[in-house]
Image (cartoon, rainbow, N blue to C red):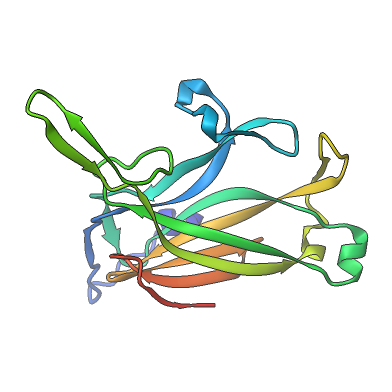
Length: 207
């Protein structure tokens, strides 16, 4: 958001900005166009409805271990989700169900791919390196009226010819001192929200 990064307001001297370092990395899992050069694995490969080869299980880390956690700071990521929304769906008031997850990782360098914990022996001294892996922090489930997707650009399934639309959502991580908010917005309107502790992913509340 422009105002968050380019505000020209003079800070209030009576307010104190609290900050600390992140002990974990936090991010979102997505798919990417398949590319061996980017380290994508064949086991993650699939063909999407457009007929494009993509890689699932890819991670985008918005807050990495060691980054400063500043009270009230928002981290945004825009990702598309495929939906179907016919004229009849809109007339009947049909909805589309979504489920999105926020992940965390304790590793010093979080992996580009969502993978579980693993152990490796390295060097002559056989040092045991433990990779904590990618874990679920919190999840949101929500519905959106299909009529709202009617203005999105449509495309056809390369196999069936069915019409699909690509809806762009804004995933926001809002930082606080002891908790974070995971928010999903569609066209500027909040459609999902939950609050989680930074450590262990204990859910405080959601709607």
